[in-house]
Amino acid sequence: MKRALITGITGQDGAYLAQLLLKKNYKVSGTYRRLSTPNFWRLHYLDIYDKVVLIPADVRDSKSLYETLVKTDPDEVYHLSAQSFVGASFDQPLQTSDITGFGVLRMLEEIKKFNDKIKFYHAASSEMFGDSINKPKNENSPFHPASPYALAKVYGYWTVDMYRKAYGIHATNGILFNHESPIRGLEFVTRKISNGVAKIHLGLANDLKLGNLDAKRDWGYAPEYVEGIWKMVQQKKPEDYVLATNDSHSVKEFVLEACKAAGVSSKKIKSTKSNFRPLDVQYLQGDYSKAKKKLNWKPKTKFSELVKIMVNEDISRWERWLKGEYFFWDAITSGDDSYIIAKKRKN
Ligand code: NAP
Ligand code: G4F
Image (cartoon, rainbow, N blue to C red; front, side):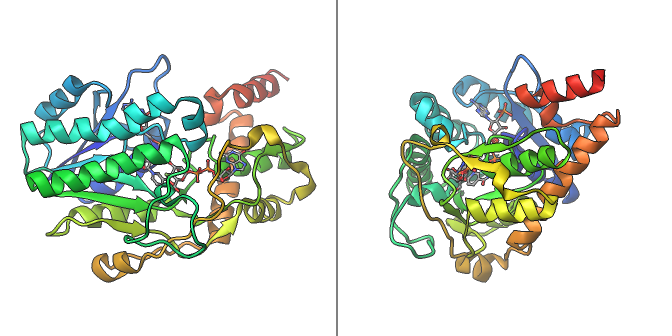
């Protein structure tokens, strides 16, 4: 039985990847960090909480990483841990560099010491391309990072490249474009929209305030992307790969599709300056030809389908929860949403 270690197993990709690896009969371990309120809702949501081994570790603490390696003795390490929200990286640039950038270096250093035969995956990002000419980006496109988050990912990207060349470690950068799902964090724009229009649909909110509606992203469906991640790690020779849909839509288009799916007027969705970033990437579109050719990977879920999946799931969760059903869900611990629930349940 192969052993996999996933850093960031509590996040969207970590949970889906754990689910996939369990199906492939791996022994799956994952790191979580100590928080005042535990954050295992995605593992419960996918019904895999009791099927994985959970180990406390923080990517800022090398000792905890080394001990995790000793405890799990993995064949493959999927390094997904990051401060992954671009918006927050402008408020916490140093913390983001430390977690998202230096975290990669710390993990690779401990792997080099513990067992340099471990196969390593780093979750790099299409944000590294930043704003440049409006053409789909591939593995050879130059980087123009436009946020502290993107800078940290570029650091991690080159760290992987260096450890591969200097120490012969089987290390891979996955350059993934945006991928979404019903278990996406509530702060990201797609989930903010699906959750927001669900509440408007049910009369729980009057409007939704977003920021830059003109930005375009290449949005895919997360469960399909974790299959691509696994395929990268199985290659004989470690290389870097782009995963994307080669299709790009604006935030405004996402809003219109979501409103259509929920039967809500798009006039209720507003843009406010306070939600704009100091610097934003206006256009991202990925060319996944290499992954198609070498990994036999391609995305299946189309943009409008993805929007419907997310909106329908958020409407259904709100309805079920308000009826009194209990299940694990992030809205119940998020400020405004938990307040709405508490108020409605009292009435
Ligand atoms: P996510 O849901 O935000 O998950 C991030 C994970 O990192 C969480 O498990 C989080 O733990 C953990 N983490 C944060 N700080 C940590 C620390 N100091 N020590 C240990 N763990 C820490 O992100 P995601 O969407 O699953 O993305 C997974 C990875 O892919 C990230 O590296 C992200 O930057 C990258 N990526 C994502 C996309 C995308 O569209 N989703 C695209 C390109 C690249 P908590 O649960 O405790 O917060
Ligand atoms: O959903 P977002 O926050 O995702 P962003 O910045 O593209 O980053 C995500 O994808 C990256 C891959 O390219 C990952 F590496 C990263 O970890 C993360 O998963 O924002 C998307 C766009 C931006 O242009 C943003 O300015 O939506 C725009 N936007 C407009 N209004 C908003 C909002 N974004 C958020 N989060 N909230 C808004 O109200």
